[in-house]
Structures are given as C-alpha cells and as structure tokens.
Length: 111
Image (tube, rainbow, N blue to C red; front, side):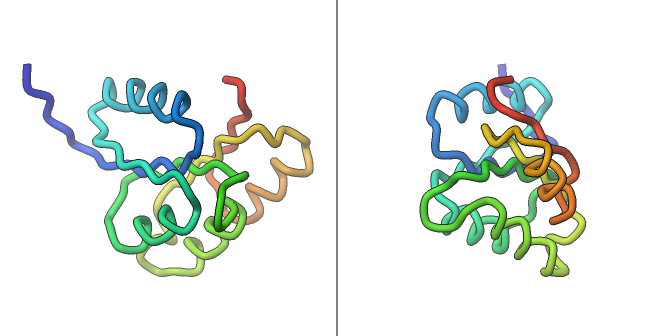
C-alpha cells in the first residue's frame, strides 16, 4: 500500500520514543513528518521548508522551544503556521506563556 501524504509537519523533539509515537499518529492523518532533535536544526528546518504544522518541545538542546516559537512568529513565512507545544512543562504559567508567544495549542506530557 502506498501512502499519499497531503500535509507536511515538523516535529522538534529530542525524545526518540515520542518522535516515533507522533510519527505513527500523524501518518494516520496523511502527514509527512520531518523531525529535528535539537532547537537549532528545528528552527532552520522551519524557516527553510513549508509546513502545515509545527509541533514543538520546549526543553531542547541548542535553542529552547520558547525562543523558536518567538522567532517563528516574527517571520512572515511562518507567522501563520499552527504551532503546538508538546512539553513536560505543565505549570499554568508555562501554558499561558506558550500561548502568549503564539502557540496555537499546548499539550503536556505524558499524553
């Protein structure tokens, strides 16, 4: 069976198990998934490719997810791309900050 991907997502996440789980879920929804395991690579990929969705961990090597979200919302090419923060930071203040920075949704781990 050949899958036809109709949408393209970026996952910026350093945990391999979560990457595989998200890949399985998004594949079922016809998403092609690119994965970056650190913030610098993820930011570069987000700025050089066109994505329909970006899923972003906050605690990442090199550049944290807060800064990535901040930068993506400043760029015209990525300003309108939905961003979902997927993180272990579950305090109410973290959720509020994530949404204020421009995330469209905030999901805490474990999920």
